[in-house]
Every structure is written in structure tokens, then in C-alpha cells.
Length: 431
Image (cartoon, rainbow, N blue to C red):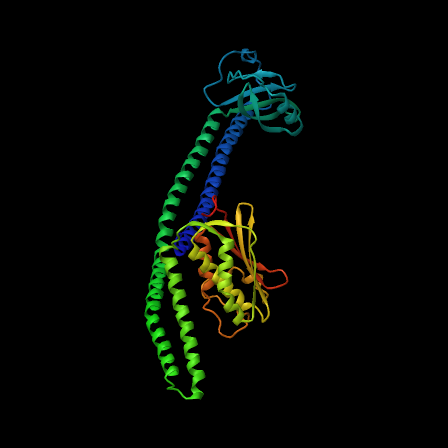
């Protein structure tokens, strides 16, 4: 069984690590996305500025008249110009008049862009020119009277820009991944160091509890022994005997508290050691309940056993008896006079369920997890005034966990609380 403190610190470190890394990842992704959007937007803006400058220069040279048709207006097989930007002059019907850049991309001039520019005066779009992406700006050319005489189509081949965009995105992604890996390593180291003082505090508290418990055992035993001597030798007046009885009871309670503290500390420091072997939980429940019958009768509580079938598990008999005694003691203490505590064992598929139910006031739903924490005692639920140490259920849960079992509490039939321990069934029967 793993050290509960170690599990708690490991769980805290995992949560702290995941939360911190998640925040760093959001920050890195946000910065990367903003950088990518800004960089791609800048590249696109540069393309649009280049097209605007090309068209403005061409319109300034035309002065309202199209250039004369030249031999470049025919279908050519010549490659595009070395520059990414090219220029086409079209007549009012959208037919090619001049191709000074000697571009030969199929699909140009683009008739759709020409139609849009004829209505709005200007059109900007990305077109597919024979598998080549082109950013195309089409502007109508107006004559002296303002009548349209033709169009200018300026294009920018986006092949290089797309490569630059892909390189930019890849670089940002690479930097982000490296940053996340570095952040993960730094976060792992920082969270580990941040928990060192907490771990030392736990260890110091554990040593203190263990040392204090050992130191208290002898005084508690001496107090009880001296009180018994006073009572046995009639060294106390009759009026003082109740006080001696109180001293003995409180000494016993202190001894139980010390024993529980030592047991809890042992399970926390080294883990609960168990020796597994096949155990019939039904037989164990009957024997343990029979031994507890005297305590139940003293509290005017009846014990009922429901364990009709063999229910074999793999576990430590002594530890399982300890667990059942804890549950029985808790149920008897919370049962009203003439109440009944029911111990039941049954098979549930591949599991065995051991339940202990009482007829007491029950446990509020909000407290059903907290009662398994050390020193938790719910006010006003025990029928006697003595109370327990608040450690029994904490020890019981650790015993259950050591057997790969789960222990839960819910409402019993007819009122009260029911504790249920669910353990894996053994693969082979008892000898």
C-alpha cells in the first residue's frame, strides 16, 4: 500500500503541474496564434500594396487610353516574368489588349473579375490560374468623359508567399513546441521544489505523532494502574470511587487513542503490510460478530448475521477482523437501545460485499466522505457521552485500500447508516 501522504503530495504535484502547464500552454498557443495571424496579415498586406502600386502606376501611364495591341496579346507559351507581379490590359469587352509582363498563365484574363470590376470599378480576389494561386486586382479604365474604355488586371503569383506563410507557421509551431517542452521541464522542477517544505512538514508532524504516542503509552498505563490500586486497596473514600472509575475510563480512552495513533502512523509511514491468503468472509463475519455479542448486549443492541453463502476473498484475516471490529464498534455505539446491527456478506459478480448497518440517526450526505478522515467526529450522533477517538474509520479505510477494496457509507434500509466494503472475490476456494 502506498504511503497516503506520498499519494497526497504526488496528486497535488500532478494537479499543480497540469494547471501550470495548461496556463503556459494557453499563453504559448495564444502568442503563437497572434504572431501567425499578424505575420500572415502582414504578408497579405504587402501583396495588396504591391498590386495597388502596380495598378496606380499603370493608370498614370495610360492617361485614359489603352495601349495599342501588340504581339504579346496572343496565346504564348513563354514562361511568366521573373517578377511575382504581372500586368494585363483589357478592352471594354474584357479581351486581352496587351501583355507587357508576357505572363502565360491559363485562365487569364479572368472574366469574373472583369464583370465585377465593370459594376463596382474595382475587384480584388484570389484566382486559380492553371493550378497557380494568383492574387488578382482588376480596375476599370475611364476615358475623358468618364466612360469605361477597358480594364487593367494586375496579378501577384502567391507561390512564394504561400511558401513563406508555411515556413512562418512551421517556425511558430516549432518554437511553441520547444517552449512547451521547456516550460514542462521547468514546471516539473519548480512544483517539485515547491512541495519540499510541505513534505518536510508532513514528515515532522509524523515523527511528532509517533514520538508523542510512544511517550504517552507509559503514563497512561501508570495512571490506570495507580487508579486500580487505589480502588483495590480501599485507599479512597466511598464518595471518591466514582472519580477513580472516571480516571480508569479516561486512562483506557487515552490508551485507545495512543494505540490508534500508533496504528495510523504505522500505516502512513510504511504502508499497511498484509499477508494475503484465501479467507471465507462469511465465516469470519460470523466469528467476529459472536465475539462482539457481549459488547452489543452491554449496550442493549442485537446483532443479526446474514451470510448464507461462502464468500472467499484474498486477504489478511487479522486485518479483516480489525476492519470488521471497527465497523461493528461504530455501529453499536450509534444504535439506540433495543436496536439491531445487521452484518451481511454476499457475492456480487466478481466481488464480495461486506456490510454493517445500524438503526441510528444516520450520517448526513455531506459528511460521508469526511468521516474517513482522522479525528473526525460528528457532533450529537453517539448515544453515549464517551465518544471515540475519531481514528477508527480512517484506519478502516486504509485496511480496505490495502486489500484493493472500496468502503462507502449510505442510508440503511429503515434508517441508520450502512457501511459497505467491496472486495475482489478470490480465484480459488479456501483450504
